[in-house]
Length: 76
Image 1: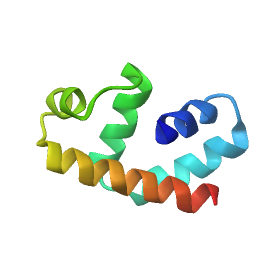
Image 2 (image 1 turned 90 degrees about the horizontal axis):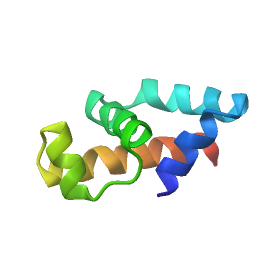
Image 3 (image 1 turned 45 degrees about the vertical axis):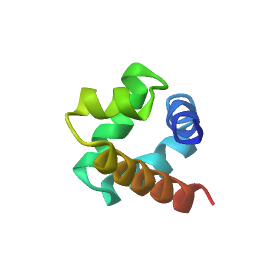
Image 4 (image 1 turned 90 degrees about the vertical axis):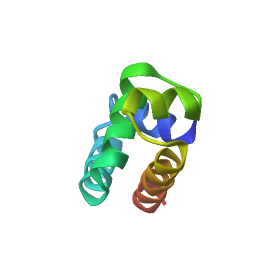
């Protein structure tokens, strides 16, 4: 939910958007895809997100953790 909140704030706050853009450039394609899915679909269970992205739950967890860490690093 924290990641989704940051991504949604980026839609309305240019400063947050700049930080999010930098974070998205620093992560893997899987993490970017997960971020895009969150913006498009909103909150999903891990099972739902993994199915929509065509990855395993373990791969999804790794992508989510990577995205979370990158966003946390950019937002302090």
